[in-house]
Every structure is written in structure tokens, then in C-alpha cells.
Amino acid sequence: MTKKLAIIGASGHGKIVADIAEQLGFTVNFYDDAYPSKTHIEHWPILGTCADLIALNNVKLNKSVVVAIGNNDIRQQKIKLLQKNGFSLTTLIHPTAIVSQYATIAQGTVVFAIAVINAFAKVGSGCIINTAAIVEHDCIIGDFTHICPNTALAGGVTVGRKSWVGIGSHVKQLVAIGDNCLIGAGSTVLKNIPDNVTAFGSPAVPQ
Image 1 (cartoon, rainbow, N blue to C red):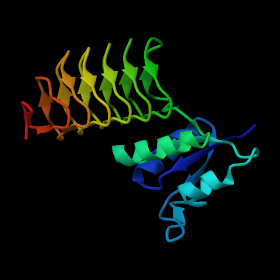
Image 2 (image 1 turned 90 degrees about the vertical axis):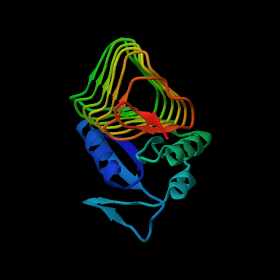
Image 3 (image 1 turned 30 degrees about the horizontal axis):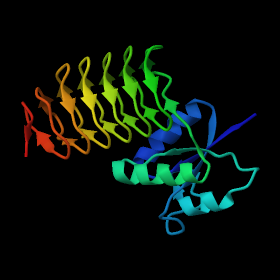
Image 4 (image 1 turned 135 degrees about the vertical axis):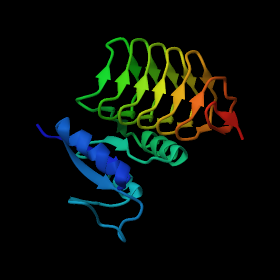
């Protein structure tokens, strides 16, 4: 039986999510709020808006969905809306990713190619663990957070809700990054970062 998956967000990020989904055996259907001015992404048709998907709302609809939107706030909004309307969030893990049997990954998270999530790490709902990211043992990643490509979190790191750890960043063991933080690309985080802070540099300095 064919597995069907609705993808919200027809962007570059959405393309990669669709590729992962197809490698996992799903048939994907795209929905994007730019429809009908935007009708395709590459060879995939866009079938409607997020509201159109919700309006289908019948027993024949496969209600498995993933939100492929990079912006943390918008991704959270869409996920909350879909959950309110009875949709089931799908978790996607690329076949080349390495995920410990002792790690925990909540619904709606996407783990990209060659990422590593090690033992007893906990990853929240609606997260993005991007290409070649490393989430070491005992890390805790809050809901709707984006760990960007080639980022490395050492053991016991905590990253709060809706934070963004930029491409190529490194975070020292046991450091805590708060909610709604933005860590700039290529940063080295050696000390705790409080909530709602932008920090970057090596070492990372709050701005």
C-alpha cells in the first residue's frame, strides 16, 4: 500500500524533505500558501494551500503531514494549526543518518543526510536536524529548533525552543542555549546563552 505524505512548504528546504520522504517510500503531495500563483516545485505539482489541505478534511484523506518550512515561527504556527485539525505529524529520518537506539525524536522532526544523533539525546517536535549535523550524547533540543548543516553539539548541550544554530557552528559540552536564540554561522559557543539572544563569533558573543 502506497504511503502518502502531505508536505507544507514548497521551497528549497521542501525539495530536500520530499527527497527524503521518497527515499523512505512515501508519495508526496505539496501544499504551499503561494498557490495558485505558484503551481510547481521542480517536477512536483502544488495541489493547494495549507487551508486547502485542511478543507479536504474527509475520511479518505491520509492525514500524515510534515511541515517543510525553515522559519521556526512559521513552522510552529503551521504545525499547531494542523494538529488542531487532526493531522498526524510524520517524522522523517534520512537513510544515511545515524540515530542511536537510545535517542528520542519527537513527531514532525526531519533528520537530514549523514546527521548523527547519539545515545540519550532528546530532540523535540518540529525540529530540523540538517545535513551532517552532530547532536552528541545527552543533548536536549527544544521544539521547533533548527540545527543547521555541519553544526556540532558536544555532549550534554541544551538548545531551547525555536532557536537557530547556524551552519558550521560548534557548541562546547554542557553549554545551554536558551529559547528563541540565533547563533550566527561558524560560531564557537563556549558559554551559556540566555533566552532571546543573537550571538556570533569565535567565541560567540551576545549582540
